[in-house]
Each structure stands twice: as structure tokens, then as C-alpha cells.
Length: 252
Image (cartoon, rainbow, N blue to C red; front, side, top):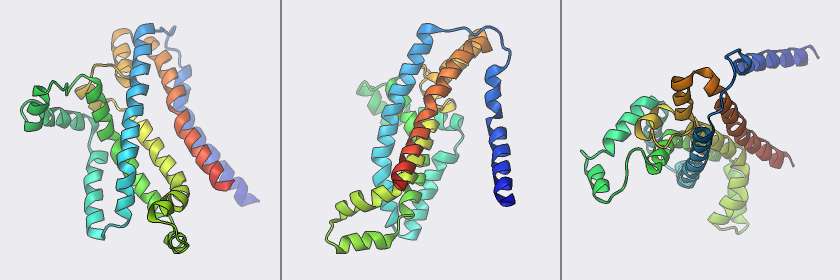
């Protein structure tokens, strides 16, 4: 019993410390100012384009993460090192490099320019930047989730006559869903909250982080608080819901 109380006390204190920044929502900053059209546009831009970016990350990252499981150790370690570059790269540096890499001075950038594809300050630039910023978080988390699936269960399912795709859908994927949900949550939060890289590559259209910065510069904290509150209330539930659903199905 003492150990249980000590564990509960430790977790409770840690939770209070982690939650303390939310007390800033109640700080006296003056009367909150609602920026109607700009706020609504920023919300629509962020959630629509981030949804597209997350879908691309999952569609591309899931098979890559699965293929890593069967790769030889040198190949896997080398690829993971490349993926880590995007995770560890400072956001501002990522934005600058993307701008240069897709700019008119490179072969690809010049080709896109001739084709009339906007490579900066466009929805496309917004999505591409978010994909680059969040892809590594999802892939590494998904790879760890697949690696944790017991191979003997997959081998048993194969011996029972299931084809490889059926083994993946009926055995591997359900067992890895909790880790995949966590990886998707990380990618969602990382993409939705990206500021530094997006500010360089796609200042327009304004997403939520850039709009928060604009409101702060124009009118101060009173103009930031309403959008910040909406941002928190809309961004946080998805990861938590994914976590609860995965945990519920695992213990059902």
C-alpha cells in the first residue's frame, strides 16, 4: 500500500508540474480580443491542410515503416539516420533549406516554376513543409510499433494459410495499432504546431501558429488568447481520442 500511495503521489506531482503552463490561460492580460475573419481562416487553413499532410504521412510512412522491419541491420540503421535528420533539424533551418531546394535556382524548382506550380506561399508549400516536419516522427514511431509485434504470431497465422497481406491486416496491424496511434498523434501535433519552417515557406496562407504570431505583433496578448484557447481545444483531443480508442480495443 505505501508503494501504491508513493507512486500515485509521484505521478500526481509530475502531472501538476506538466499542467502548470496551462495556468497561463488565466493570467491577467486584459480583455480578450476576437479577430473574427482572420481567426476563422487560420483555423480552416490549418485543419484542412494539416489533415491532408497527415494523410500523406500515414499513407507513405506506414509501408516504409513495415519494410524497415525486414531490412538488414546496416540498411535499416542508415535509413533511420536519414529520417532522424528531419526530426533533429531546427525548424527554421528546415524552412530555409526547403525554400532553397525548391527555389528557381535548382533544377527541380525551375521545372516547377515553368509548370506554374507555386513552391512558396501556397497551400502546396504549406502541406509539403508539414509533411517534411512530421514525417520522421510518424515513421520512427510506426517502425517501433511494428517491431514490437511478436513474429511467432505472424508465423503461426501464415502456417494456418493466411496470405502475407492477410497476416498484416489481421495480425500485425491490430497488434501494432496502439503504437501507430501514438505515432500518428505525434505527427499530427508536430505538423499542426509547426511555426518556424512554415513561416519561411508558406507565410501565406496563414495557419494557426503564424496567425498567433501576427496577432501578437499587431495587438498583443489580448488578441492571442482566443485563438490560443481554440487551438488547444481543437488540437489536443485527436491524439487523446486515438489513444483511448486504441487502448479500449486492445483491452476489449
